[in-house]
Image (cartoon, rainbow, N blue to C red; front, side, top):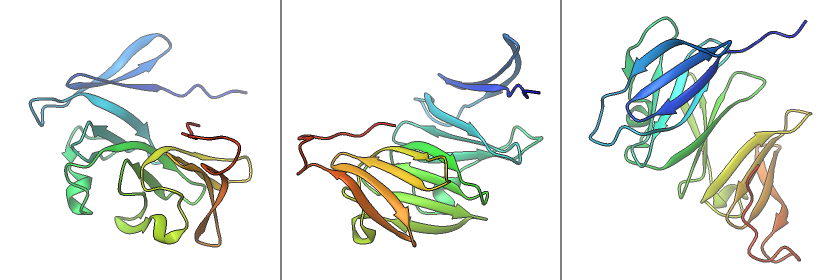
Length: 167
């Protein structure tokens, strides 16, 4: 039996939750003059994570409409957060354009950057493979997290010149 998940959609000043072709919930996002929600994700606990262009990222605890500035709590204010991913252990991964990748575990923050093997701190994509390994695309290549360190799989010096990776 396939379980249907609700779809979350970010828009100007709103987050829409859609199920069976109907909007079942609308959350008002009125934080800035520009409230364009560009990425939104619901985790396994039904919490909602979202980002506003160049304004960090935010969190709405399950069962509420209260918006918490998670970026401020972890030092990512006015940053371009471009994606979220929940891993198999329930950690929330936050990718940024210029600051690398962050792993949140109960608001404990671990930052991965070029110092940890990323090919570039300008992250364009983050995804898990079928075994649960973390894959991160940057402006300079594709990286995999193994043993708490990133290793390049593909890089800009390979035959894929000017490699921007989007997953």
